[in-house]
Image 1 (cartoon, rainbow, N blue to C red):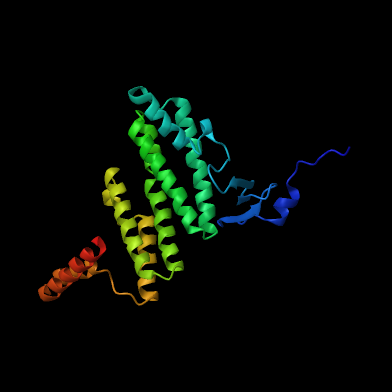
Image 2: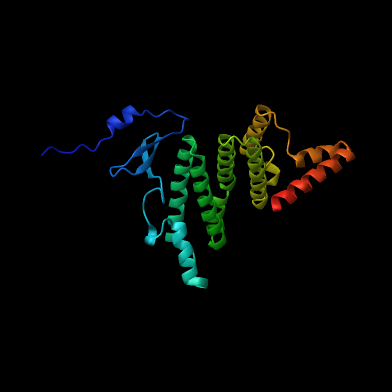
Length: 249
């Protein structure tokens, strides 16, 4: 019986790594299920497309977040994030990061949004229950980055759906969330010059120009007030009120 080869030479040679490029692909697993592969400098990461990226079900749950949420209800006031639990949270953050950037590279925006939302929920849970401030800060510093990915994905999903106005709204909402995250971290003075913020604003300007869109009514109102065009400002306030009333119905 011949000895099975364990090397990946052929796979890596057929899919060369390009520095600075996020290369991902969907392939069929041995049983036909969809799996996701991400080419990295030293090889290939293969991830499950559904559930936790490594395919594990911690304690019978889809993810560590789901497991910890259940345990927090069971244990009540005795619940705490032990070293082992924090280690598993760290692993899950990394796994969902890799899959999120793979989805973005494949323009699977809805799935990127789902993974970003999972990371944000896990971050919220961790920050609420951890008593190690340094460990919390280590993760919270990446909240704007996760929000950046989610904002990008939401806006691009709207563009793909031929709804550029909704894409602009998604970018504006994302900027507001990112600003709030900077403020919570005491870094509000860094917000305006942050690279991620500048990229979102550049994307917003490009969409406005590409689709010949007017700025949102709230922005038009602010500009009218600044220019002391009070009649125009009153008209814009009325339009905003009517639009808000229509959405509430």
